[in-house]
Image (cartoon, one colour):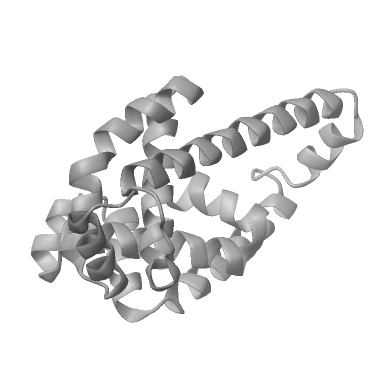
Amino acid sequence: RMNTEEQLLLEQLKLGNEKAYGSLYQNHYAVLCHFANYYLHDKFAAETAVEDVIYHIWKNRENLNISTSIRSYLVRAVRNKCLDILKLKRNQTELALSCLSEKSNYYIDNQIAYDSPHGTLLSKELEEKIIKAIENLPTECKQVFLKSRMENKKNQEIAEELGISVNTVKYHIKNALKILREKLGKYCYIYLLLVLMN
């Protein structure tokens, strides 16, 4: 069951207290990453899974309903996240194998290759769409996102420059990526990740 200290933390979290949000990282992040890595056998993927879970909790903080201890709740959430990732990987592998026999993919890929007139036009259209989507992000969210992804600044640098916490920086980056993924659709979003964010 949740102890008094955790109940106070949960209350502060619901109120949007960034220190409470930061304490989730401080008290649970390392253990959760180790736990996630047990499932995924990939340190980066494990860290990403844990960050996604904690971010999801922060974003939906007002509707949180935790009856167990916070650690137990987080462990269960991370476990479910890891299982979802493994399921997605398995599905992607099966899809990739099935596509190998589809010769038509080769011709489609060549039609839109970036060194062809078709491909150049396509990449420009995608880039314009992405730029417009970024411009429409909430002001502070856009500011943080551009400094992180376009100026290649570290979270700590951005936090000091804008006078906000590192956790707030992480929140804005996650939120920006979520908004862009929803606005752009899967293929434009992948283009954003591969081209504009290198």
